[in-house]
Length: 180
Image (spheres, rainbow, N blue to C red):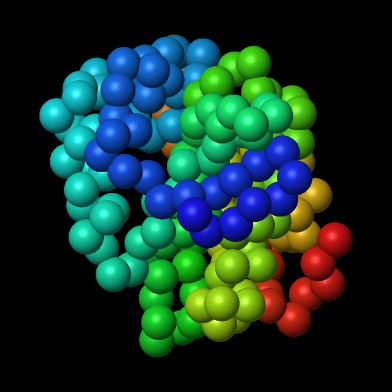
């Protein structure tokens, strides 16, 4: 286990996490609407390969977000820190919450804040970055609430639903920035 903050725990993703529920999230068009994985059908073998790659990577951390309800813990999504670029003391942060019943309850902000503190305080990184589709207001708000700032916008950077182009909002945070 990495960190626990009240109603959320972050721990490293394990092969045992790869099951019908997890794969179902990645194939759910509502959940994957803003994920790059939406372009291909996700299979158990493919997801297991990805998890194995993350476990073996010295430059990536893949965390399971576990919602704590009393004594029970329920995997609700994942957060990735990486790739870490040691030469620049920087890394990217990305996440998804697959459990739709957990949307809009602050779990994204909490997870981002937890991994931000881990990255800056334990890994001694100096900069974190993130990007989100412009229409993904929930993700953008979660990063801003965790202290990230909007640094720019890539116009028409990705192809969204029905082939329409969509902007990507770029965000970042320095270790010296104030933490909410």
